[in-house]
Image (cartoon, rainbow, N blue to C red; front, side, top):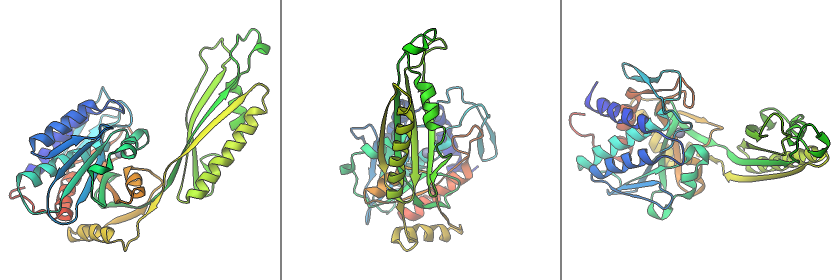
Length: 365
Ligand SMILES: [Zn+2]
């Protein structure tokens, strides 16, 4: 294992032990702040708690980003190592998403700071609450940033994975209000849980229509077996490349659910849907896309440019006019209990960043 790889390994192992879900990213935040300060990087937190770091340089600034939170708690984390692979033991997520990207960015910032090479100005934004709904990216203080080109290290796979198109996204929250009561006297209550089953029974599965996905991800209802549930709420979402079509389908589902729910006497249905972020498409001819794919080819790597129905902070950045490329961060099977990280991929990403940022690689790495 060379120097860079063993440094990445040490940082990554420290980070995965600190991983927490939003809004509890404190330990990871203080670790990153301390590291960046020690590396002599100008670093601060914006009002949302995101980390913003900058290193001066010459030419056009570039933004490098990933997030600070993991999707679910993994406090009993244990891992296995096999050559360059670090793998969850199968009982929890590893937290490689986002810690591979974080480790890479911390090592890269250290390398460009301590070796005083010529390069583009580098801005780093590490966001909170990405998994909860891109919260940190949405609430970031963009007055602290000047870059109009960004690389977001937050895709499954090696650095050659490169998103050219991502969907628009609508958050869809519903509440059905019935009446709580004791089941010995059913007439006195209105069972909101049974009403929601009726309301959802005829809805499409997985797709609202061709091109728009639809998912009910979470539902809360009831307090006890021997109580008529007076309230049900659920969280759902829609995704699609065509913004207008996604909004149209959200409105249609709102109408259908309300109509079927309120057909049950005594039930009131309240639905709140919000267009959370706009989809984007980056052309192959875009100068930044061309530069990035060119850098990969220069390294002897074949870019794998694809479209995805997944969202990332890149969606928010693109909507704000920053050309943001979401790229593979060297983690695999993200959010699954067989999640793993590949240190060899992470070392390749460090090399790639040196090339894109225009920094000479330090001697002996
Ligand atoms: Zn992620």
